[in-house]
Length: 151
Image 1 (cartoon, rainbow, N blue to C red):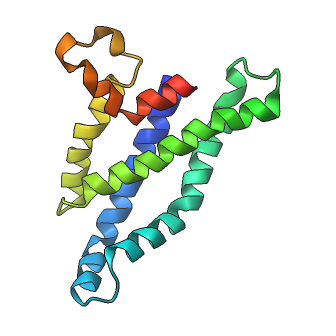
Image 2: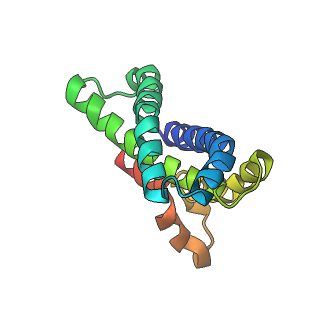
C-alpha cells in the first residue's frame, strides 16, 4: 500500500511539473499583459486537470485493489480505498506546482522535485522505523504518510 501511495504521488508530481513548465512562459506573458490573475489561472488549471486526478488513481486502484484482501464489502471498500489515493493526487498537484513555479526549466524542476519526493517517501511511514530522533517531526509534513495510514 505504501508503494501504491508513493506511485500515485510521484507520478502526479512529475506530470504536473512537466505540464506547468510548458505553460510557464505563456502564464508569465499573460500575467504581464494583465489578461487574468493567478487565482483565475489556478482555478482553471485545477478544473482542467481534475479528470486526470480522478482517472490516474482510479486506474492504479483497479489494477491493485483485488490483490489486497478487501473484498468482503466490495463497493464500500473500493471507494474507501480510492478516496485517500484521490486526495494524495490532489496534494501532489499542489506540490508539483509549488516545486515547478520558481524553476526556469524542466530539468531544474525535475531535480528540485527530489527535495520533496525523497523526504516524503522516507518519512511517509514505510521507512519510519529508522528515523533519527531529531527529525521525526518531518513525517507530519508528508502526504504519503497520511494516505498510507488511511489505507
